[in-house]
Image (cartoon, rainbow, N blue to C red; front, side, top):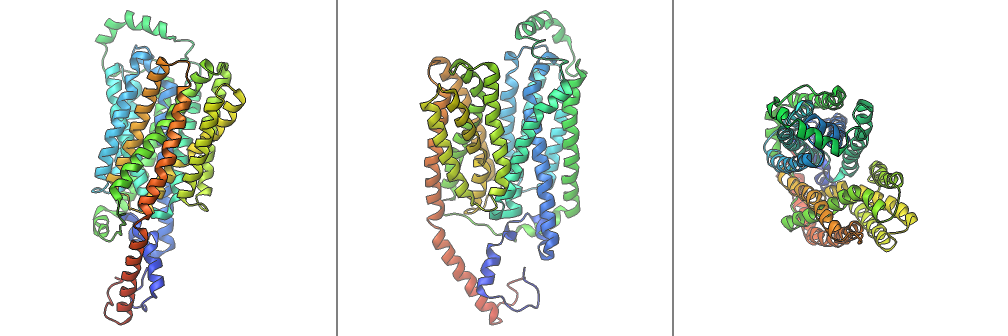
Length: 489
């Protein structure tokens, strides 16, 4: 940052300042830029809080899976009739992503994130008390809105904090989510134990219970204390954790205040690529295929391994675990990889590995050895693509709330649509490895889309840099001649 009374810097120094990430810091941190180390410490502290919130986000999203059976018992429904809660949460997440993208361009970032975490906390505490399936579905939709705002806002805030230098921090943010998703089943197992297990409540028994107690269910109140108090504790622990993190976010808002944020907002520098809208549309498709393939493979590989590859249930569970295990491990290592590799390089390496591994899966789909090896490589290749894609696009065009919401919605639609289509096709063609064909097709699609995005992003870049350099050199000359003494301030 320039200091008052100091001599005019050289043109090269001014160019380095123009490229520094300070211009992309959020408004609440911009005022700390002149304090150097203090500003960096504050940015690092905010990044830690965001990672903590994404850890809770992963816990909140993944806890539904291991507690789904207990929630169904709580509302006197069987598993199949309660699957609408996933649809409700997905639509809520889509709505929250859009709402968050719009609000983040007009509201204080910390206030919006803190409020969304408080809403998530309330939802987590109320879910175990829901006694009807309709109320539980509505609660899951509201819960999805809050996590959609948090997901979009966290990505936007990391980009605002670090700009195009934030690749390691973006990887850390998404590793925190994966870590939370990994810890959620362990937390559920510790909290629930064997009090209510899948063996004790088969679907047939739940159907019978639902029929016999339908009149009672109609007369029940909307809320009630759950019969299984361990279910309440599983959600309450995560809710308390989210509440603590929300306090830190709200404290940051109160410390900085909204007036300073609005005063600083006009000073933010923005880059806009010539093909900004086309890049966002292609990134929408890129994340649509990538996230859809990731969720599809993780959801269907267990049943595929049993029905198509002839594995036992324990072997299929191990195959499923190795996919998510390598996914989480490489996402953690990517924090360090991102310090020495460009986001584009990481995307290219991931695309090559995903195409190669998915091709091997298709060619040798009945070989257990190939399934184990290729699945581990495929899981590793999927780990870094999403955070690297966000970091990569920020290098060429500034991403604000609406833009982030747009490609997050693309990812959410892929998560909803592709697994549903695969399920239908697998039922019609049970002898074909539809899951593996989908993985290969999505890998080829992302491998083709990225070079096109790279071409669009870089084609006007040379001209933009030349004009930018010319403008900065002119400003430096004017400043050096005394004609523009106040330009720095």
